[in-house]
Image (spheres, rainbow, N blue to C red):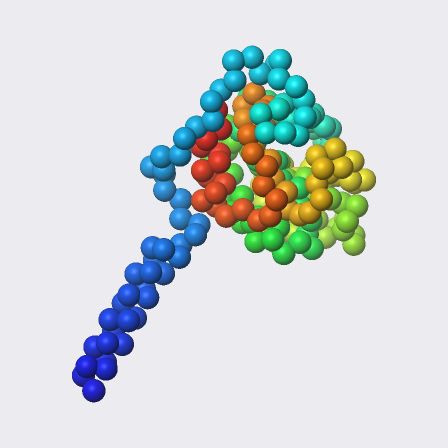
Length: 190
C-alpha cells in the first residue's frame, strides 16, 4: 500500500512540474532572446502592400467614441493590428492576452489597434458589451462596411498584422495568438 501511495505522489509531482513548465503556453520570458527584425534603410521607398516587408496601407476609421483615426496616426509605434468579431471564439480567447500586453507595454510605444467587423455583428451594441466584458482599453476601431477588412484581405477571424515603427508589415497571422507569441513578435519590431 505504501508503494502505491508513493508512486501516486511521484506521478502527481511529475504532472505538477510538467504543468508548471512545459504546458504554460502563455509564459512570457522577459529575457527572451528573439532576433529583432532589421530596420530598413529607406522605409519611405518601400512599396505599399500586404506582403511582409511592405508598407502597411493606410486607412481611416472611427473609434468607439466617434473619433476619426488613421493607421498613419500611430506611425512611430509598434502596432498589433487585429481584425476581430464578438462572435468569434478564437477572438474571445486572444483578447485578454492583447489587453495584458497592451497594459504592460503601452508606455514603451506599443499599441493594439483592434478593428471590429461591425458589418458581421448582429447588433453594434454587442461590441460595446464585449469591450466592457473584457475591460479593453486599447483603441477599438469600427469597420462598419468591411472596407478595411477587404483592403487587408481578411478572410477569417482573427487576422493580425505586426507593423513596425516605420509602418512596415513584419508578419501576418491568421488565427488566435497567445501572449508569448504576441510578446515575441512585439519585441522583434524595430
